[in-house]
Length: 199
Image (cartoon, rainbow, N blue to C red; front, side, top):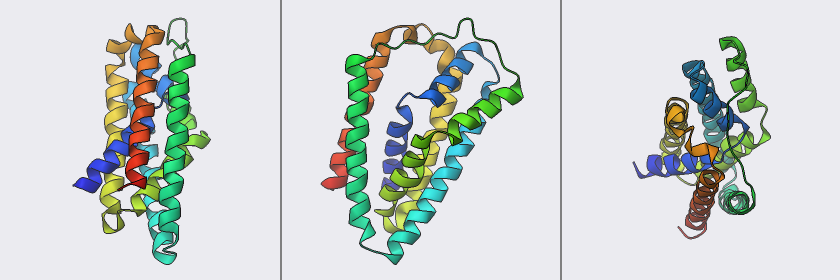
């Protein structure tokens, strides 16, 4: 259970970082346009990538035990950098979200766009295949529970984002909301990085 909760926390902190994929889901949710299909496409993509990361890194670490410490320190460094970028956005970027004036795509085009945001984004491979896979490897036999926790966080997040977006529309029209979110993400990532280095 502890492995699953750790996976959920890491997965949630990574996916919270607002990028093109999340902004697209948020906009679709605000407009109530094909929300279920978009959420399913994003969540299933994450599940596949997380499973591949957990399977691949688990096999590699079993074959080469020296990869364990390297993966732990590499993951910590990545989280520190990712957290710093989130804190930088919180301090300097004045972002807002508005879906007004956007043309509504068909269901097929919306799903294809969601898949493109999921699979053509290089950060998603760093997050799922590399980072989640590397951290999961630290849990040995519990790595699949860790991966299940990370995958569950993606499903929960996309459902909440897609269907809760309508309520968030007024909030994310304000730059301050993005700053608070990015600051929280940055601090959470630094906390996880510290836990990796000092278990």
